[in-house]
Image (cartoon, rainbow, N blue to C red; front, side, top):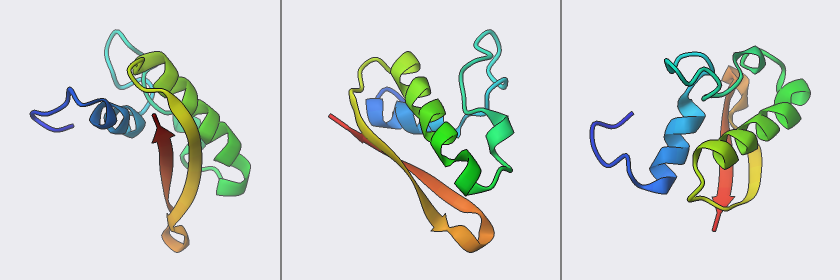
Length: 87
């Protein structure tokens, strides 16, 4: 998380998607589900996108989510990115 400038809604969404569920004291549901991290992308893609959508809708009400997509950044090494289009 950045030391300053965290009030921007897009930055807040980025921060939310980088959290792992359970690491925020008193907000144990905030963050992505850790069960999905080591799953094959073909098996976990739909659940990852649904989890990200739930997270954004519940913890960042300033954002209206239009679409969300999982894309392979470096698929050979297991790096994926979540693209969220907002309005």
